[in-house]
Length: 549
Image (tube, rainbow, N blue to C red; front, side, top):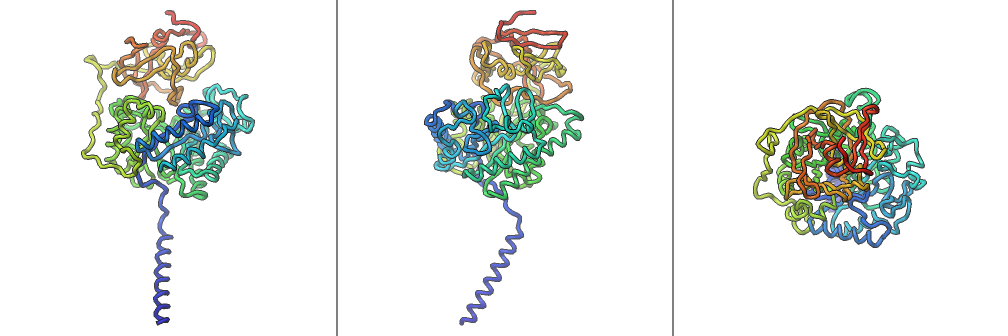
């Protein structure tokens, strides 16, 4: 009997060994959530979402608690909390100083640990917490670098920096920079129970000029390889030290233009080769920012989502769709967006930007999210009862009986000064007039006597300009595509309401962005505009009102 038991034990041991050998030969499963992603971004840079009160630990903790309660009530299950907005920290770090968004002072201890607090509170509500990092940003434009803490990278490693449009960035080409960012990630993983590490869409500065060649030349390709090296290094560091932690990136919505998609191409503007990250398996997921409505003339929601679905098909990389909840035109379609994506097997959920728009229920977006996900953060997607039908994408946008005019838009070479300070706008000349993005102008004159807010009013189907009100940044102001080629501009006839009064402003759509004649905006808002032919310089002056010249 004993011999029989021994034979049986030996047989079981051999079977177990065979099973183990087979398992060891199988490829490792990717670290990715199997449930539907129902995420939201909490932006801290420039205090966009948090905190609204500086220097008050109790008030800030109350803010975070209220946010998380609201997220849980809407059925969200993942929070992407921005912990490193500009080479500083919303957590205790030996590598970088406390962020000034917490107290108003770089390097000042806020009296509590925001990351530790938000992790604890999110987990208590059954939600994941991902640490959102901006890898390269060192300062915002026009930052007083003298006010930065002594251990800030600007002062500790000035040789690591590059400058563009008045802001400072870590140089992506330097191994020292790559190793520093990896060390930051490892520091977070070593001290905090985060569920993921998340990069946003900022890599090389948008439009950072090449010294030679074009966007497909050797220098441009080397820039993409520099970014790829960082992504690979971070991926390897996470896998070696905390393999249960997911790593993902949220690139801009357009990788490259296609026959149906046109706009700012991240492959060329910031040198982000997202498809290489997917193909090499360096990320567990991508969350492209598909920030357009279904009727957008050059980047219709369905077309862009389908591009990314095709990009991840057959890979182990998950796809989450970034949604522009702050845009009323997009937020008003949110129920249809969710239903549409649930029909695509490659799409595993959504991440919403931003928290402020969610809490304000911009365009009814919060209501739509809550209705889609239910009142609790369950992880199983509901089955739609029928195939969703998004509004049809028009073959040609027409807003009245007259056909829309097309024109040639030539990139402007003019220098632009705002109250005597140079600003790097992307502008075009159409019919001898210079056209600017409205949000770029609003950002440039913010906190001056001529500041103005600009929003989209869904109920009125109009752009509202409210003078005397501070502008609320959305994050892509004064970005550049770096193009030097002429473009085809399509006339835009959107209704414009300035302080409630309908106002005629000449505008054109170029590569998915709307550009307005500078003099029309100046007259509507009442700021001064000057032109020097000798120096090829445009002046925007907020100390005086508009005057015809």
